[in-house]
Length: 221
Image (spheres, rainbow, N blue to C red):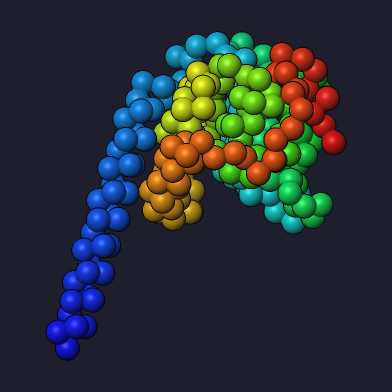
């Protein structure tokens, strides 16, 4: 019985240490992104591109509400002259699932955006990989990130640590049914981001340079 109590005590202490560490990292990420997240595009500085981070696309090709709002917010930035290019990053790791081309079709067919202004990152499997490749593959120096408020501190933080001058634009245009889950998951995601940055983890895929100031169609598949 004493041995069991000792094990339980050790496990509780371990859980408390992990919780405390997670809280400290989360606060660090939030503090690092202060002053770089904006609700209005007029407050942004001009950048090389506005990035649309990937989100769920349904089997029938419909874009999730979170993704639609990221697109619409990015278009406000683009059309108001804060960024000359749009960088679409997302998961296209298998033929049956393709976030980036779904967004490209929307931008071309619905919004009538010129193809040369649309860059596709087919290997943006997570936020870290997306920002890493924005810097190394697309050679961006200044980047505006369009995503929801729960996600922005982590995205801006990662970009800064990878050598990008990052700003965030809030893409919350509604209340999302996954809001509680998103907030809970984000604390763990910030810890992962902190670890990736600390150990300078490489993305899953590299690639030859596709400069963001060129023709976006060179990044299409």
